[in-house]
Image 1 (cartoon, each protein chain N blue to C red):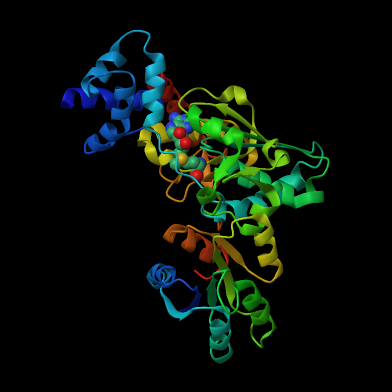
Image 2 (cartoon, chains in turn cyan, brown):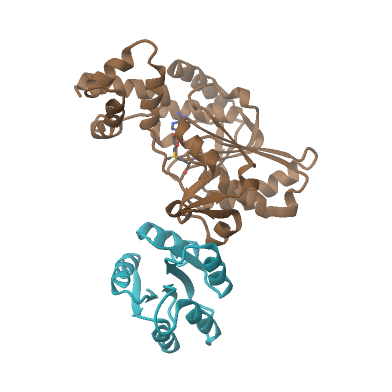
Length: 121
Length: 291
Ligand SMILES: C[S@@+](CC[C@H](N)C(=O)[O-])C[C@H]1O[C@@H](n2cnc3c(N)ncnc32)[C@H](O)[C@@H]1O
């Protein structure tokens, strides 16, 4: 089973995302901010990361840049999932090494389509 | 709605659009047509049926037919046919049409435009390979409402997140308020016009590629056969037909054959003599159905 790290400071979003991704047969790990997420990745690199942008301590963008510099950090497929729904943010995310981008609000269909897009399902 | 009225609507829809409704679809008819009844001031579906039977009810008939269409679609739907387009159909056609540098593509049931625009984006991203070529994409649909939307090329955030890779979104769309507008150069690559697949389309000329996806599923077998046979007649001998994931030519016509190892892809089969026989009878039957 593939693992997906869900990084979001909202427990509600994490719960919704967890339910969707478990339905797609992922094992879920959660983190509340970029710093926590980075620590998780250092000890156990996931196959996928579903990543919020705005979070306390370390935001999603900084996390992604740090992740891509870690040994094996190029491996996880990173899908942003954020309310930052404009071209500038999307371009910055892709530049930092994001594989896909979900604009909130999202539903199961969108998550599934995006995870398919990057070859996770 | 009485059984007689439901029966009338079933026959009416089959004749007008090919839609084959099973007897258990009364709820569907009701949910789709009650809003129309209300809009035109008919008290119930019985009254709407009575109006449909009146002379000069063509405009109302069109509304009813359109309301019963299912327009579900998304960008790069099912992926595989679009991969086939990029890696099989286009390379073959770029080689075989090098003298004329002309390729004609037809999306027969394009709905709100995601399918033809997906093809247009692929062509655009082929860049230099198609420079100097004239590649036409004709996109048609029975329903005028979706054609209008397709022409506008403006999609909601939800629509652009189904099937469209994020890289293509920021490359070929601009954000206008909460909508995403497809780029003018992509939009200009597709011509839209209304067309009913039950009607004669031989006057459209010959095509190298036809996408006829997720529409035959709504037809009964006889109508499928008729449409497939007439599609075969407007295909170049080395042309390609892409059907939907749940559609096939197998068992329906010998005028078309599956292309080995290319799921959902078909080619004209002019070798089969009996195929021609089936082709003619299919077309004749269909004229009756469509008339
Ligand atoms: C489910 S959509 C498929 C759209 C697109 N081809 C795809 O695969 O995503 C089916 C479309 O077929 C159109 N349609 C139904 N009956 C038709 C007919 N007789 N002639 C042409 N189009 C028809 C409907 O209006 C609808 O937009």
